[in-house]
Length: 245
Image (cartoon, rainbow, N blue to C red; front, side, top):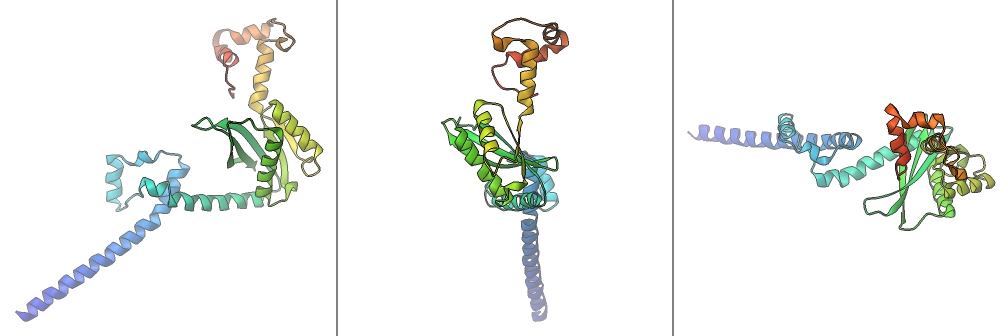
């Protein structure tokens, strides 16, 4: 009887230890899967709630994976993946011989003005930064200092790698191009007006030839674009917002 009791106690202890070891490895494996899962969520630009469905929960249970909470996805995991991606992107910049920088102003959800900076290399576009401007209009000197600052960050101070700069065609940007072309460290940079704005100007001239000269004549080409299946152009021309094509 004592031998049987001792044997049962040993079996219970063994099973308990086995469960502890299993839980440890399951927990360790779950943690190791969190980062690739988080990266998949971020790069898919999916809403975190997308994974809170009964079907997905059932799937995660079947593969013995517990997805990270929204707090972890929006906190430490986001910080870790962001640092990892920034390092990878910087390696791309370091290995390129020419960098194209693009900026554009916009407003965030609270209507505060921000200036977005992106760059292209080898025909691939990367987001770099958003600079808060507030409720004020960015001056040409603010824009120049902001863009050059980001260019220095990306090139580690080697502005010779900065090949071109693209922006919209507002008065501030035109003045900015003049400053770039007259400054020794940036005069080599090719300034390129934004294509979408250029297309808008082309369509404006087609639809309202001579409008800039206060004439309201309409050409045959303008009539063609305003009729039939080309009504979409009329929508663009009558919109009070800047629309890209």
